[in-house]
Amino acid sequence: MKQEQNILLTGDRPTGKLHLGHLVGSLQERVTIQDDPSYDRRFVLVADIQALASHAGDPQAIKENVRDVVLDYLSVGIDPAKTTICVQSAIPAIAELAIYFMNLVSVAQLQHNPTIKTEMKDKGFGASVPLGFLAHPVHQAADILAFGATRVPVGSDQEPLIEQANDIVKKFNALYGETFSPIKAIISKTPRLVGIDGTAKMSKSLGNAIFLSDPSKVVEEKVMAMYTDPAHIQVSDPGTVEGNAVFSYLDAFDPDKEGVAELKEQYRKGGLGDVVIKKRLIGVLETLLTPFREKRAVYEKDADLVETILREGTAEACSYTEEIAKKVRNMMGISYL
Ligand code: TRP
Image 1: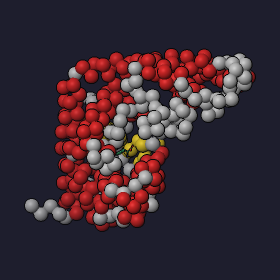
Image 2: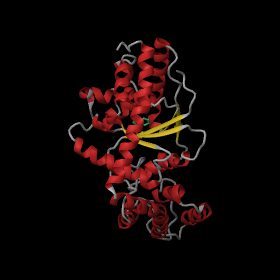
Image 3: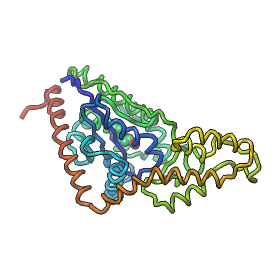
């Protein structure tokens, strides 16, 4: 069944609204890829089971997050006519493949997976890590392989999960015959966006994010409170550009690169106040976010439309993945009925 098509799959854990870090790290790329003819199919998976693996006690919150994430997708320009948006828990083939793949992976292998190690430390699970959480690399391999995906755009932190999935591909093919093609991770070239507090990563849980759905007023407040250079006290003081969050954001979002280069020079010399650069960033973000807000408003008013998009996308994903699951059963020789 070696499939020759180029299938793209990406996914997000619905743990909250998406922010500027997601935009730079993956969403922009997904929108661009929609018009790349080298892909035969594109899927975006809302990985709600993966979110449940660490929030089992709060399925209601996850349900709300699913809707928010879909709204975020639609507002940044993910087009359901080009990209199938679907929800993980409603796709039986993923769960089925995950169970088969569990026999191909050892517990020790998962415990040593760098992504899992970092996340376990962040979440403070220790020895009481839920099995579902430990197994999420296997589940993610099932996400990818249920779609026969060959290209997976992910953040660099996810690379070990793609390696794990490729290990499963090798083991499965060796045991049951050539079934799956190798998976290629597409790692974002844009540097990771720092938080508004200047720390390494923008993240909802660190409380340092600007959300794609933040209203103008909130964006303005967040930018005005942003970390710059703590030693830049008087306007006339020379300032540091490296590690200065406002400049990192201008680098990421301001289309006028020359203008930004001039500002940096002026800031380094002294004589340029933080308020000036922050005001500029507010303008840049407004230009970026306004069209998203307008689109979002349309979808927010029409809850039925959003539900229909998700229902139809998921139905399509179900029939698509069921074909692959059938082939998997055949290869394994377990289609007895
Ligand atoms: N683990 C990914 C994240 O936390 C989300 C995800 C779930 C995913 N399934 C996927 C990404 C399949 C790519 C492919 O960001």
